[in-house]
Image (cartoon, rainbow, N blue to C red; front, side):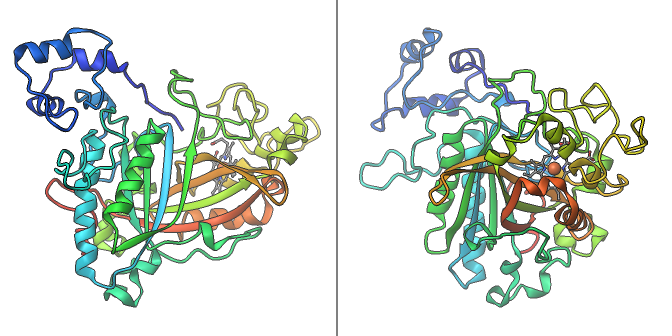
Length: 430
Ligand SMILES: C=CC1=C(C)c2cc3[nH]c(cc4nc(cc5[nH]c(cc1n2)c(C)c5CCC(=O)O)C(CCC(=O)O)=C4C)c(C)c3C=C
Ligand SMILES: [Fe+2]
């Protein structure tokens, strides 16, 4: 996966961009009591390049902002940001009206957070709890995206929506090698937050959870990361915790026809309210890094079917050289082993998914002293029955990578189509 996350220097962008009335009003509100700014006051704030104003929101930098509203939800074909905070929620209300209210409030808050704005209007009243928890105040939008979906349990008997459940939103079948744990599985609602700043990503989930009080509760969360845009300004394919470039073989997100084929549910697919949406599969996959680190480079490359340094298919030199599974060595053995991860995941090339995974590290397993680290595998499908499921059935049975990984969490969500301005998430369903 590639990123286009180039955060601008805070001092530069605040000084170089046009400043809207809204920005000035926000700056005037610095400190809660409200700072009265005349022309000279504004000049004083913007006069010194490189100085920052504590608590003030930065000017709107379009390159740093991903629009929340649109035909499709952001965060799916959007180039991957540096950080992930994933959260699954369970609804505690039994009223569909309350769910609708929640989705409206989440929409408003998410659109504000994607812009880098504070949530709500009560952030300066000393007599009220602030409507925003405050830890993202003054920070750039940092390409924040917030992507919402609903799981199979959303369509159980509670809300009278069983008949609206998409046939494609199946419960995932058990796969070979699964060691799934309740604590990292399922959820009525799934929310994927991405941003180029972890504090901003955390802030988003924290505030969505706070807004949901009395209607929904957190079920499980997982933070994720990859190398940052700062550490690799070239935006090369990031490496996973096994040291390999991960994302090379992803379909081209700029190719609309391909995305319509692979990612976006279509109106003729059987669930009109999902047209323009996508089915997200989440798998928490622990990597036995201690075992991997004892295996030879040769075994590691044979496991994936790619060279570690270049990311090229075995036998080739460049990362994006074609994967040719028919190539043989001098003894007639396939250069890319038939049970390697790439050979099995690719198959004949007819089944594709869009991967948008992040590494995770959640401390250590106290029982074993080993890292609890791995991959929060996320992929998007037009129909997981035809894409992720058959692919994982093959991998679960035969992938040599299974020696080093274990799937311990799992969830699937129907991610809504994009929201038009004035609408709310899920408005094609509710
Ligand atoms: C069922 C889908 C997949 C799971 C689960 C999965 C887990 C997983 N993958 C890696 C690392 C790599 N995967 C790579 C390629 C690749 N993986 C999948 C699917 C799943 N991976 C696909 C469809 C592909 C592309 C195949 C192709 O058409 O070429 C690679 C190679 C580089 C790349 O293309 O991204 C790596 C490396 C890990 C570590 C992992 C679970 C922990
Ligand atoms: Fe993979």
